[in-house]
Length: 172
Image (cartoon, rainbow, N blue to C red; front, side, top):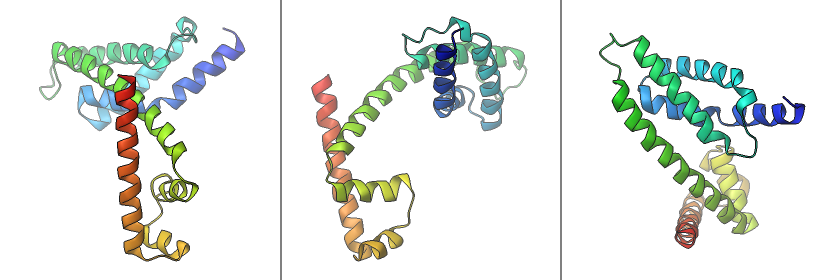
């Protein structure tokens, strides 16, 4: 495998760990089992790295591998009554994959809408939601009241929500 393709594969694999975990968790319904299956999925993906085509989207391919790992996990632990059966897991896997594609469109629209915000509003969103700064700290640094910051965030969230809805409607 070429070094640039391998580097791209590793970036994709590491960048999608949360999405893979969420996908697996939605199928097995248990955090510990999801973590175990994620490890197995990562190993399987690494073993199949040579099959990866960087011209195609990584996540659907990785979801397919993860689905096979979930089914193997369910098969191996069939006696545990708390686990889903394989048929139900298949149905759920298809639903989760469809929803994942919707999430990608929403995230792309949100990124675009964030870029359209004024610098002050973009900074407010970044401080609150990306850096998880407490509202009190944001208000203090901005020299504004806590109430004013809450109202500003409410307005920005509405603005972003409306923008995302317009983008999604335009794309449909």
